[in-house]
Image 1 (spheres, helix red, strand yellow):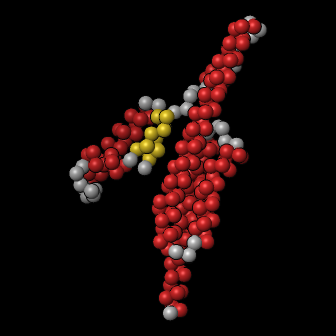
Image 2 (cartoon, rainbow, N blue to C red):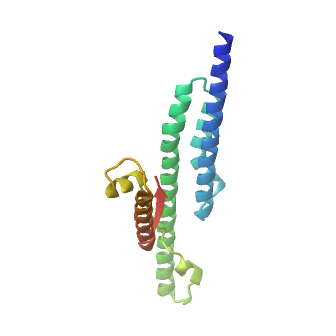
Length: 179
């Protein structure tokens, strides 16, 4: 019985470590997006990262393999996607506020005629791009009836279709999230 328990404990430790590393990777990805957003504050970062950090702590204490598996493969994606969506909403909100402030500033300047030059950096700021998800499996199903890639030609066709899709989205001024 002690051998079975030892094997279970070893498996539990391996799966827990795997899940924690997976979450750490998602946290790093989210931190990168927060830093690239140019609106990242400590408060926003904490707000967006906290659910992932809590999940990590929950997994570190979990004693069930099936629960660890479920948390890693389902809940992490839900929390990660929600945090990314919240970040995008915040970026859009800040862009709207900045645009409104510029409009008020433009109106006040025209009304009072005290200033005639607006800083170039305020004018050159582009609105945030729309985020589009690319579902790789769905894209593959467009070009093949098969579930598997089995030939070099199938790989080439899939990669070319993916490349064309991604390039078109980038040309359309979209941000692409791969799924």
